[in-house]
Length: 411
Image (cartoon, rainbow, N blue to C red; front, side, top):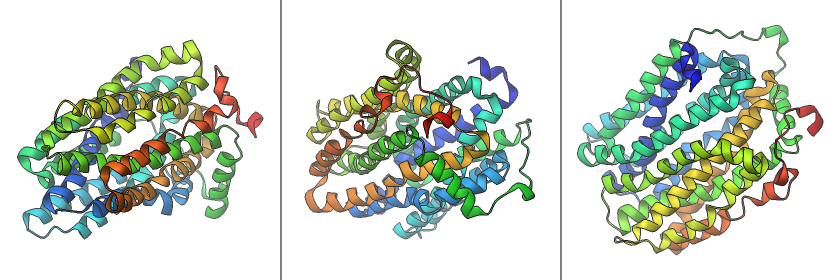
């Protein structure tokens, strides 16, 4: 937390706080707009989830090369502004009685495009702002923001949705994106922009990023593990919301309260991450964080509107711990192992690989949900989630106490 004394990191921290609170509300509100306001089917909810992440497949790779050519802070400010404007159209259309599922698809696509650019710039900007020697500290602070937002965002958001209705609750997310842009604009430290003469053509730059990630024996394993986990999580998440809202008849406030268990787990993850890494090593910390929570997803299909809601809470709580511990460890390693001129392309390539499975998972979850039912589809997702850790446990990272940072020795 000593980093918060630094004016520029504090600006990034406050921007991330506002953006994360808004994004946590968005995860709950956008599907509930479709379910409660537009009476969407399981397939339509799955397609909406796919639209939110489709951009990572379509423009993920060129976005990284473009970000490496630009000042990353400016990319983040523009992205926040564009997301705020796109999202503001939903409550306006609802107020005019003109909202359709097709507008939600369009808004989800726009949000996805600018999230691609924001994330590629955001993860590449931190080493410039705090230095590589403080990456773990910086990532831990920012991951703490995300988990606290995950803790309070769904429960507060659920009740906002319940009292304001889902479309108008999105105004809070719009305000979060606007505040984030303002905080980022006040950062003083300036970046140097690459000279035009020093740039290769876009296709060549994209290729450099892809070759770096796929040629790195540890990064490609991390990509495989994260992509597999994300695929089955993206099948499960929209259907868990559908299970709670439609089959169990729970209100938005109750659903938000249940989902906030993931935030509690995330806070625990932030607190124990460094101790785990010191005690058992960074490599074992990564694969255990993925392997241990996955089987608990088998409990969720047994949930009913009684004491068995605790099964959902248990899964969300443990998944929250695992996701945070895994993310801090693998993200800090990725940033430390990558030369600064390649950071944007490395992050975009990783996002392309690991988030590229999200639209497929959303679509697959919607199709399976219609074909075999919500609960059966959740069992399928649980089976797949249990396989993700194999990417790491069958690699040299299985027993590494410290992950190496020199990329040149790992090709």
